[in-house]
Image (cartoon, rainbow, N blue to C red; front, side):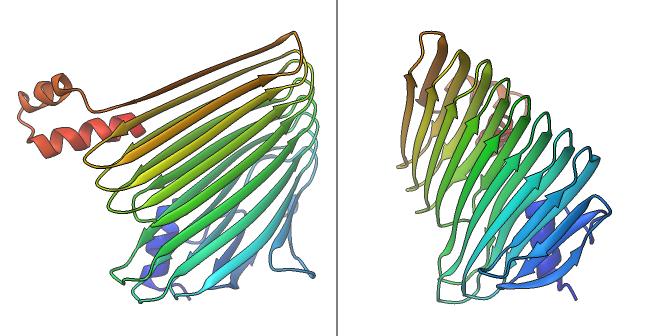
Length: 305
């Protein structure tokens, strides 16, 4: 049975108001809570380590698989999940972790996700992190995502973390083969004394592979953020990094975009910008009747949309 807290966490990290249709695997406090498979998507428990194998049959269209993790106890949880996305498939994968910590000890979830996206397949992967609870124990999330994108396949990553998580290190590694395509959208907001680090490395190893990485973040109070974004071109390819951050109060942001070309026809571009909210934007909204705090929040919501 799902408690009211469980349901709220699932809504935050997976936009679920009830048990989803289609394939799903819900993990709670280190244990499998509920699972459902379909004719085209199978979910199998690993036998050598904690985690699951998700197998999507070739040609599967319009289906989804939800694999949220929720923690309501002060424990450390580690999982290894492997995804096989069959050739010509087109699927949505929704992951994420929500932590409710009311204790004095740390609650931590570390997840290693490995994807094999086969020829001409399409996958959208959504990963949301959320933390809550009035305990003094830290809420810690450390995801690692490794993706192999075969010829002609497309992968879209949406990674979101808005407040609530005290510490996070996110590692993302992607290899793109011939005519493969990657789109990454990262949105992050830290406040109080939170710490966040994001490391994204994309290797374009196949001819005409393309990658676009857009990272937007807001750092408030005394929080600290570090971004390492790395594009490496080994063939005729195109890649673009855009990293924009708003910094407020006593926060610190370090954005380190890097591009490296190992082929004369690799076209790689990076942009990075860190700044504060423009006073003209605040004044314009305040003349419409918003308080300064309301105007500030409106600007931040639009920036992170």
